[in-house]
Length: 414
Ligand SMILES: Cc1cc2nc3c(=O)[nH]c(=O)nc-3n(C[C@H](O)[C@H](O)[C@H](O)COP(=O)(O)OP(=O)(O)OC[C@H]3O[C@@H](n4cnc5c(N)ncnc54)[C@H](O)[C@@H]3O)c2cc1C
Image (tube, rainbow, N blue to C red):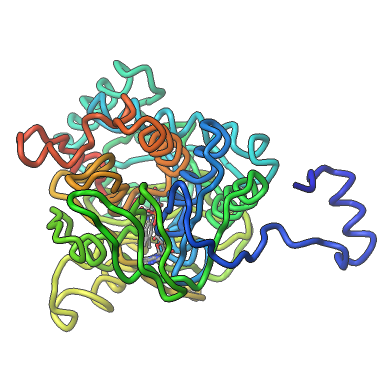
């Protein structure tokens, strides 16, 4: 793998950027692999990378029906944090944040991590009490979190209208939270996995599975049959479709989640601001655009409550809190199909089918989990047992009732 450094970047600039070489190969799929990963999003690519780097399993294929990162990984609003409520989630997401903190040197690829904090607002005294409880839980899990007064919030976000229709009463911040560049995360993992020998096969849709008894033996694809005793499903909002081909019914609802960006403006917002009550969040990207999101399109009837209505709600929530943004023009709007579980906790680990592993149920918040998702899934596949950090995230929790309800900590989609 070509090492990137200041010198190589400067040399490329001085030669008109004409000498860049391709960062991953375009291989033909082989007839068989040790591990096949379905889905070339962040989780699939990270799993392949850690399988090769940490476990020496390099005969691996990542099969992607479209292009790398073209699913939710390339559509999200890039928010990263680890301030979850329950100890299981806190441990997992903190592991992810720590991996993010070292990811650029690890992958030799700048993922543009910007830890400028994530501020969650409270709009009533009752809500502020809940945020205090949440902060205490986070601190007990040895993760940074701080309650802020209205005066502190005013200083941190001068453009915020704290006297909005739902006045701001306070909030809490995780200063190590923030954003990173989502394409760079996908490309960085792809480049590093490719360098370790992983085959990344784009334009290759998995259409079915080969099984023998209760074992998976391979996959059917639009580019032919590929054999493998170990198959990882990492397809986010498409998980139910693929699992259904194996007769697996999963507790996942798939729905659209929208986001949008404004035209670029000068730096004016130095943290991610999130309001669970008014239901929107906003941050400013390195390019100056405001990146705006809200809740998922929860209602099935597009005409009634989904689509444009959600978009309109998100914009009015933004303008309620930031009247100064009224004159901004929106540049782009899009959606991804997210996979939501009843307790807003992912589903990771083994399935009833031997050799079939699942990494799904990330809903609106799996971007921040990509490094830990890949790391723990790789360990799980290599050892054929769930990594200790994801033991509680298995499908069996829906039979035992031992759910990890992170609904409140998911707050607004982020
Ligand atoms: C608008 C929006 C905003 C979001 N904001 C945030 C945020 O700020 N922070 C956060 O943490 N999370 C956020 N998320 C959620 C986050 O993006 C996802 O949870 C995460 O990207 C999931 O990664 P993944 O690799 O599992 O899935 P994906 O990136 O969706 O990758 C799955 C891949 O599987 C491929 N695939 C599907 N079916 C097949 C098949 N049959 N054969 C081969 N390939 C197949 C797809 O093409 C896709 O590329 C957001 C999501 C959306 C939509």
